[in-house]
Amino acid sequence: MRIDGLMGILPETSTVEKLQPTKDSSFIESLTHTNSALNEADSKLQHVVQGDNIPLHEVMLSLNEAKLSLQFITQIRNRLLSAYQELMREQI
Image 1 (tube, one colour):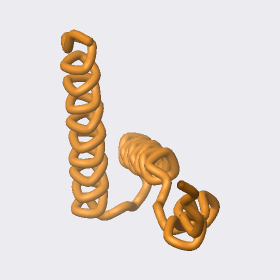
Image 2 (spheres, one colour):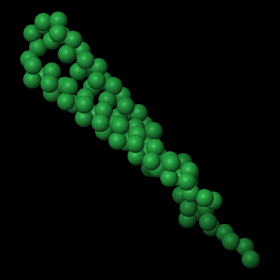
Image 3 (cartoon, helix red, strand yellow):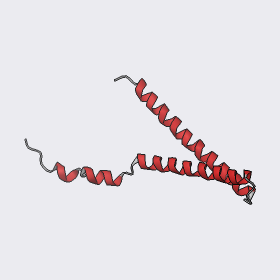
Image 4 (tube, one colour):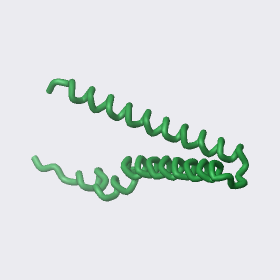
């Protein structure tokens, strides 16, 4: 018995890879955003300490954005670590 025509049914690997967004890039983008938010908040805080004329509400908003972004990344890390540990506990 000969089976032909499976190549027409299954999508090519390159097509499937193009359709799926990479998880690495979105996580790296989140890390980059968190890093820039922390740097911006630090910079604004340094300017306030030096006596520059920056509105305090902008500094507080920047600090809160950096805090929330860091908490978000920390939760992602915790969930990834938990999933990894659960996979390691499973017996094959």
